[in-house]
Each structure stands twice: as structure tokens, then as C-alpha cells.
Length: 241
Image 1: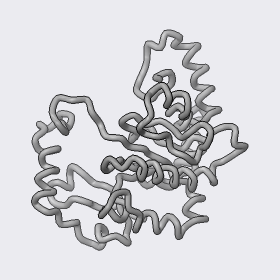
Image 2: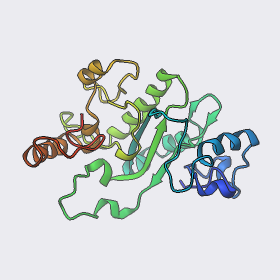
Image 3: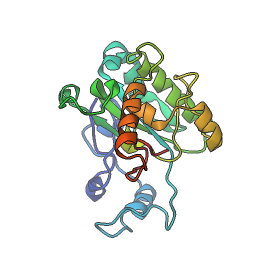
Image 4: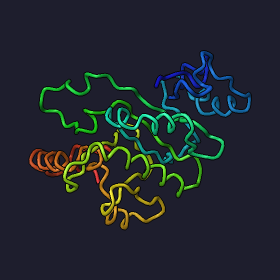
């Protein structure tokens, strides 16, 4: 598995996404982008002044739905054929074959680089790759099935006693109204179309999926002792519900 440019030329400075060597995007040449596709990309990036946050669609606060996961080294070692097929041929939307979603490859020091006080769970320490699954259209069911499939193939290598979630999602690339998985079935994604109250009742808090159950409870205890009024809050941080 490798990383390569998706857009070449000057636009390559702005956007690099993940792919694999078996897809056309990584055969030694940058992907040739059609004028219409490049025009759409320019509307997102080139109309924003240098040094400012990207303005995707005018004065609004909407952001698309995305889910991010850390894939364990053991998953690649034991299910090589599945993951090669996943990255090479899986369709997240009709016509989008092969994973062109963003990803990061992780180095071996991730497993050992710590002073013993960091909150990263096993899912981080044992990961080889971090991937982002972004919702490409309104096919919620297909997207939920994709998340559920990845969850199942990750959890089998992180599962402990089935009572404490191990923690393997990734904070920086969770956007939209992400929550989940279902409390009653960790292999199933939280349905996107349910209301907030039902989501809180049926789906696991994002922080628990990030840090793992035991870690999350420890961090909440620290938070309650040192910041009982929740004066310091960040999206999807401890106490930010």
C-alpha cells in the first residue's frame, strides 16, 4: 500500500489523497483531471484567499459526514486478500471503484512512542493505516453497510471481553453528525437518519469510540476533577457532548 497524488500539477499542492499501487492512480503518472472536475475543485480551493480557511460553499456551517478508523497491523497480516480487495475494488458509490478516500500510513514508532501518560488506546498503538470513509451521496444504507463491514474486520483484532470497547476511530477526520456504533452491536454503524435523542440512546458516544471505554472513563474522571464547569471544551473532546 502506498500514497500517491490524485490531482497533479499546481492542484497537487492543495490535495493529495490515498490510493494503492493496483489502481490507475498509482501507475507512475499523476491522474489526468478532466476540465469540469478541475473547475469544480478550483471553486473549492482557488476562490479562497491564500492563508484563509477554505470556503466550500459560501456562508454556511454545513460539513459532510465522514467516519475515520485505524486499521490494525494484525488485520493486514491475517486478512491480506480482504484488504487488498477493499483498497483496490471496493465501491463506496457507483463508479467510484478503488479507495480514493484520504488515508495516512503510520510508522512503527506509533506503538512505542509515549511517556506512559498519553490517552491513545490499543486501536492507535497497533494501527498500520488510518482511513476516512466520507459519504459520497445520499445512499445512507450503503454507507452504513460500508462502515459496519470495516468495523467488523477491525474489531476482531482488538476485541477483549466484549464489555469494554477498545477504541479505534480517529478524531481529526470525524465530521458531520457522526456517532456509533450501536451499543447493542458494535459491528453495526449508527443509523444516520435517526434523531439526536435516539442517537444518544442507541449509539455509543464518539469519545468512547476514540479512546476506548476504560480510557474514556479515566479521562472523564480527570476532566470532572480539574474542570468541573467544563470551561475548556473542544468538539468531540472529553465532556463535549
